[in-house]
Image 1 (spheres, rainbow, N blue to C red):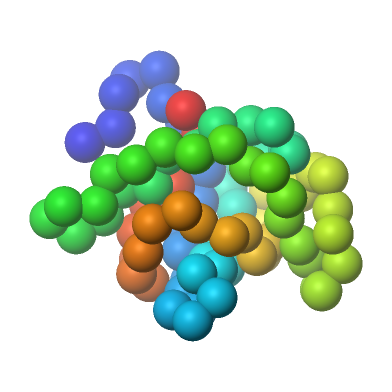
Image 2: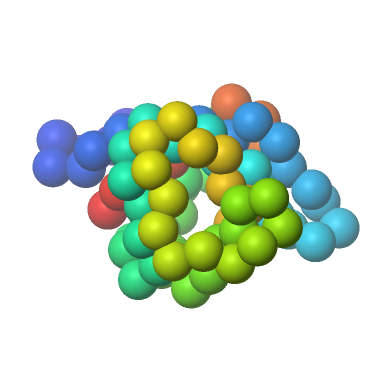
Length: 86
């Protein structure tokens, strides 16, 4: 499970296999350059840097709590997986 110092950031609400993009409903602020950790299922647990993200098909640099953003992931994920700020 996540370390104590990691803050819950949100949850994956959609995942598009072909383009490897997750839609994440945010419970906190996320910026380009932040590191995130995706945890779920029995084997998924990885970290990556946020290189770019989109909201409403527009590239954005920062997203606020309550927003849903699209983010390309380096590994597969599923709906319901948790996202933490690493």
